[in-house]
Structures are given as C-alpha cells and as structure tokens.
Image (cartoon, rainbow, N blue to C red):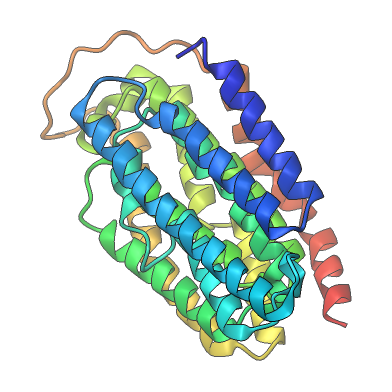
Length: 351
C-alpha cells in the first residue's frame, strides 16, 4: 500500500482540481468515477472478508449513483442541448441529480453503505472517505444550490440527522458511531446550502477538522469499541483529552468550533422563515448528543478508582500525540473566534 499512496494522493488532487475548475457534467462525472476507483484500494487494503465486503458495497452504491447522474445528464442534453451543471433547469432532472449526489455522500435513505464501509476500513483510510471523497459531490451540490428544491433538501437533512442519531443510541462499535456521526454532520452541512452556500463551506471545513482529529486519536488509542475506551485515560491522558475536545466539538457544544456552523445555520433558517426545519434539526441533534456524551464519559470521565465492568486488555504503551493531532485539536477548539465575521458575511448574503 505505501507504493500506491502517491498515486492515490495525486489522483485525488487531480479530481479535486477538475471539480474546482469545471462546470461540465461529463468532466465532473469522470472526476467522480476517478475518485471512486482510487478509494477502492484504501478500503480493500488487506485480505480480510470485512474489507472485501466493504469495498463491494461501496463500489455498487457509487456505481448506482454514477448511473443516475449520467442518466439525468443525457436527458438534459436531449431536451436542452446543454452540458453545464448550471443549465439543468428541469426540476425533475435536478432532483434526480441531487438524489444521486446524496447517495455518494451517504445521506438517508441512502446511508446503509456508510457504517459498513467504515467498519471495514482503518481509521486513517476512513479520513479520506469521510472528508476528501465528499468534496466532489459537495461542490456539485454547491453549483446546483439555486435549483435544488428546498423541501427535498430539508426532508433528506431532517431524516439523516434523526435516523443517524437514533441508530447510534445502542451502537457499541466506535467506527460505526463515527460513520453515523458523519451522516448527521453532513445533514447540518447541506440543509442550508440553498440559502447560504458559504455556511456549507464553513460547516464542511470544521467537520473535516474535527472528524479527522477524532479518527487520528482513536487510531492512537487502538480502540474499536466503547468498552475499550474505559481504560484509555489511564493509558494516554493527553490523547484522551484531545479525543474529548473533538467529540464535544462534533456534538456542537459551545464554545467549541462545532457550535459555530450549527448556530449560524439555525440563525439563517429562522431568517428565511424555515422555523420548523430549524426546530426539527435541533431536536434531532439531541439524539447525536447522547452518544457523543457517552463516548466522552467512557474516554475521560471514568477515572480510577472505578468499577468498570470490562476486560483489561494488554496493549502497547501509547506514544505521545503527534503534531498533526495537536494542531487539529487546537483548530477544533479555537475556530469559534470566527463567528462574528461569518455572521456578518451571511447577513450580507441574505440582503
């Protein structure tokens, strides 16, 4: 796998540049296919049945979404003769394209592949799938944002935030919890894309930082289930503290950075008159808050002496945290200072 890492990074960079520089549907579709194929070796990087199953589910799901995108583009080209993504004026074709991109991102009701795929991957490889891989579909939705039906967008976002939080209540596998957290966070990212695209960029940026911090710290702690977290603070207190910061930031509690996009999103939704959408998203976020707090409690609040009913596993001593994890954790903690500036920008966009 180290031999292929430069090829994977180069291909992902090229596809990102295509998304940023082109608005033609065919070129963007090719970039989507390239990014899909280049992530497959990251998923199936070891000869394990779980990795093979995860790569198969990922490939079939992404292929279905790509087929829907090329189908909607073909119909649009036949009817209008245009190939630009901003020229898809038919509401039905716009909805089909948006739903196909929701499949690629992993929103409800197309979320079934995300937890199973992340469960079969390493935490480091999961960072690419949960952050960089979502950038292309997010750019396409950003370009289509004036044409997307807000009722469809709000319904998918509410369902994603609610079902992801509900499925995480009794989940004990940490990687599946991170996947469900990603679904809920992307719901908050996309619910406001029609009215304030700049908030979507900010929310995705902060989400990428905090989810990367969480996965890197979990890899350092070598934990796969919630029960294993009970002894993490005794093994590595600094790493557990960084994990606590990233988890509380993902939950959206102030004064951490995760609170910023949620606060601005609610403020913008209320200003646009979508009060019921804002209220429902807030209620759905309470479900996610529960399993975030459960992870935080198990990782940093079970200090000795305790009566943790878990098997004491033998593990190598955890090394000191790297500069990458420290930098990401500090960013997750201090980016709340940009709230006033972003609030002024969104207010100007609304006028």
